[in-house]
Length: 263
Image 1 (spheres, one colour):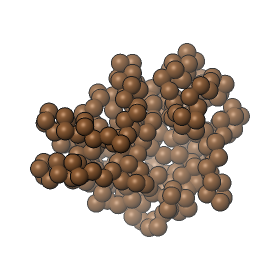
Image 2: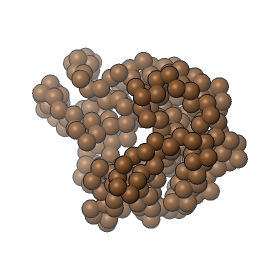
Image 3: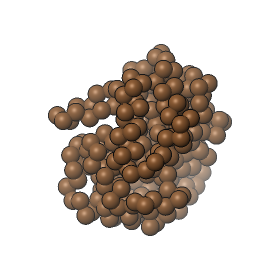
């Protein structure tokens, strides 16, 4: 998302830097890249293809469908079955693959769709999975009941909802996913376009000799055994900083202190 222009719209400010971030991530062992054809739109998927194709066998490129990006920058939800299928084919072309490793169906968000059935839309993607165009299916912006409904149609391997140190409304979903061995991928793990800010977080990071970003990511990684994190970055320096969080083990007292931070 951060590899596109401002607000995930338009081409990157620095094309070569964006390519360097992608190649640097894979060179440093990253095996999960989160993208979508609506970032840019299209430009980020084309960057991924330019930088990384042919893709390593262990690289999971997860994409999302369920929205379209208009030429004026607006996001428009698009969950009609036929358009979802068209979006899958758009991603296949832009990424240059015969099958997509993981496709997350993105709804408008948990609050907007709390009681809405996703069966018709998810069935369309399940059909493409049966055809071999999608290997695995996930959901984004959903409730536990919607995950249960989707699992009655096809396996769900990942759930991607808003979750970070300060925003924890999805605590029940995190625990549900862990119990069901489903990956939970919290989007905006560092707060998104409004970075996490907390005096307590800053003080704790100083004591641990780490950065606020690293502590926030380490907390997520220790929160659940099925947690995956997708911090966005447009620079190699931030990439290195984020990856170092995987080597940071937070002591119990630090976790308890962080658990008291919530917005």
